[in-house]
Length: 401
Image (tube, rainbow, N blue to C red):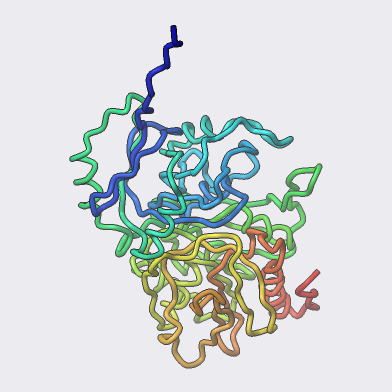
């Protein structure tokens, strides 16, 4: 008698990605249960998923990882980027190709699935992330709902309504959602292998960092160059900042539409520009500096998200491999006379840096602290430090160590 053949078993989807146009993508759920509405982007980095998911600049977004194997090095408490982990600022959703495996790394302190649950990040795996990436490249970053239900029961009509009804990131000020609640002093210096993080206890200069969603490693690099770093909330006024007597002012990265955040940030930046205090901006800070100088920003089709983006620095003639995370960009054609374009993307020619002619003021669109090159762009922090040193009559350090 022939052996009985087991019936074909179909796995019931426990997670859905429902796009605003009604498209439904089924997968396996992990991380937090429930649902979140956001914009879907893709990130091409091969490493750094924990840093990516905790970057406050990803607030209001669902990150699709193009690299198929995410989670195999686990998670730890050292690699987070948001300043206040309890607030869980960062991506609200994550999408993976392969199932998350058990961690295998000497620094691993936990499993990615459990970490996602604690962070409140809804995630799904088991989909064709290449196809989703192509969809984003062709049609732009869609609004969507990501949902996870272990029993596989979903109200599809409600999910479609929510995805179609969300207004999106244009006009949305998210910096006020992720900024610090009060001022604080940052002392932690960069991580050293086999030692961990250090502490700045003998600062030589004072930098005030306006927190629109700042990343920890930015603050570490500032502290590592001898700065006492005072972090202030996004809506802090110019008078209060200047009363702190800073040697330098930093405009941080952050999420959302720069024009929306600029409603309150641009007047402050314009007042700060009336002084001769050196000023440096990154990402959202770069965009708002451009707005303060009379430029414009625009929503990008697919954005720049990854750790392998080539950018040319016109001030040195060098090409750097940089980390990017932005869905809005400065319109280079809108920059007024006296504002120089210093950096440009070699992928699409979009603006990646500006400087104010004859003034100690500059900014970049990319993330020089994220070390993809691995340290191609760290010189920008030394450039900022040298502007402070010049103002104090001190000798400049070499830009590249």
